[in-house]
Length: 287
Ligand SMILES: O=C(O)CCC(=O)C(=O)O
Image (cartoon, rainbow, N blue to C red; front, side, top):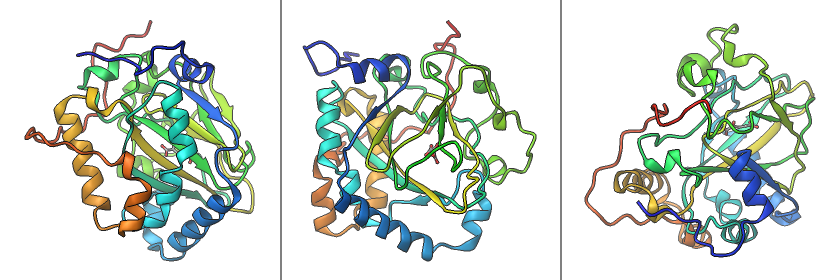
């Protein structure tokens, strides 16, 4: 399968960091108006949240799906971020879904996990991520209010955490076992404190987690899932992204869909969607 970066020029420093470490940060990519609009959407989503949802997902936080929240279209389609991705050599990104993840005061750690769902696709064993996250924090984050933590390099190297179970199952999301080793510290982990208005782009294959929110304020991130170089993914992967997007967002108002128009996946073949697969096979080694 031909996989290229879509660029003939030298890779940018940001792309190099994403390629070797698994993440990079872009500063000042959201203006105050867009932040305010997104915060209003977050306020509404949290106000109408079913109380059980937070109990079931106490480790990550609210985990509110983008489907019922077309006001997220502004931040999802943020043209500054899309231009930056193109310039980094990751054009033709398609949108799967976004999630509003709000950690209440004293919200616990989020466990270590990676979110790649297409480990059967050869792209998952290449230097071009099959799936990336764009995380926009609504507040400045620090170790005190539960900032992101990452394990650089784990997107391309096998780690002991790969053997520790699947992410986002009910038991780990609800912290059935507080002694689960996915809540521990690991050598070489790195804090990623963020400023509201900046953007962290990460490879979905990289292990990431968060600290406890020890503050008395909630701390919210919008996680947005993109699939760069969509046409280079396997047909079954494209078909799955297409279905995941359209089943959630086709009912968004026309104006919201217009804001994300370049990101809408269109798979026109007849291959059925893949079955999601969160586990790498022997093609991922520890070297
Ligand atoms: O809450 C955070 O800061 C990180 C969220 C996260 O890990 C995810 O969306 O996969």
